Length: 580
Image 1 (cartoon, helix red, strand yellow):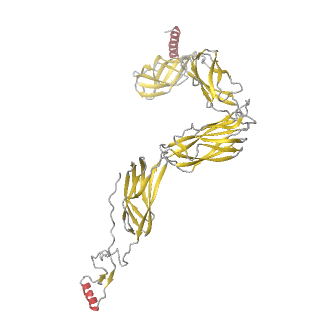
Image 2 (cartoon, rainbow, N blue to C red; image 1 turned 90 degrees about the vertical axis):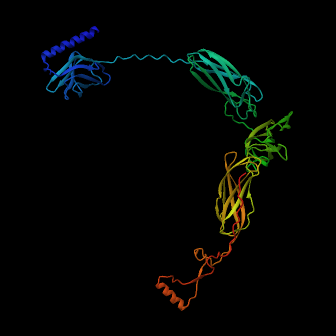
Image 3 (cartoon, helix red, strand yellow; image 1 turned 30 degrees about the horizontal axis):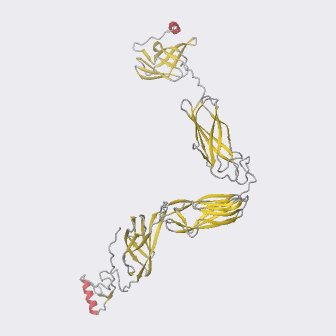
């Protein structure tokens, strides 16, 4: 124990004796005693509950503490909770003065018991907040970039891009890798990936990348090149930087490299396919169709001597004389669509600025073409106002379907039907196509009668396979009656489609005797006719009535009871069908 703490305890003990001599403690009861405090030491930065253990505690007992605080004696009452005669609880609020206290329990009648120097209240020792270390990381920055393309990047001429990178951070950069990405430039030799390795802080390194233009540059002065830099520090933390480089290009039409990205005063011809359509709604293998292309000149100069090549190709100029001297149109892809009637090369003449024309091409879908979306390349070759030969390549998309070839008919002859009489319709569905077909529900309906058993699921049908449905039809009108058969299915592009077929039947009006009464089954179904009776017969019926016997008027049916009436045509049952 430190000397300071010993001195403090001694002073508290002496003060307690001094206070006792000035104000004598009340006489302690024999049963009241304080034996221990739990916990004996608390901190004053939070609320605390101390437990006073002893004996003889009254439910109205009060706990107080006496201590030497700030140079004088301080006595404070604490919030007290009675637990039982041997246990009390008291509260120490936050901010309680630190010191060593004697704990006193006072029962009613000023009967007290004190446990000297039994509670220590202390301030928590503040912990030192460590000073964070300065944040250190590598930082790759772009110092400069340039190309060796004099007059700008040109189509068909390779060039080299030189880039200098600097590590402006406070740590070494490890595993530095540079990736170039562009839709208008092709990377040569290394695929656009350059591995540098490590770069020390403050160090500057240079890299080179070989490239070439993917197409001509029309009406622009610069092209954008994306450069991504990835690296990490010595702890393995990764970093990524993205830079966009703007490179000067050679304008194909004017031959001038402009200083800004927005060219002014540029005059050119520009042909685009603004619309295209076919004369068939659905293209299927083996079908011939006509493709109409609307070609529009959206430039401000006319396009002359236009040649359209379906499938892709090019036209080359001959010497110093403007105009086409050689056409290459046989290298296109014709595995799915092939020209019919004419070749795939057509001369369209001139299109003034802002005008358009419609060009047509007869094509056939290859019988071996599978369903799908197929791109078709179209080359538009023309001469601009400067006499330069320009080849514009565009792509359109044609959709090829393979729809089921289904026949819907009767699998046995159906003769004349009678009105209001049910008949079996032997309907048959046959797959006449060369491929397996999956069909959905089949429905048989008619506005001229009622149909029963007219809905079923077909499923898959092999080539030549069939499915039968025996529907019950009751015609309501005579004459030519129409039955609508509808089959649902899903095409190759997951679109819902239907196959419909109208079947025609002949219905004859059934002649029924006007005296027939369906509500009179006891009389054979015919209207009863009252008999003429004499006066004696009437007296006899009266006498029968007096004895409770049948005294009704005698009748005479037009047909005797048990007579079946007129002969009705019986329905001819159809042979049961099936699915093959």
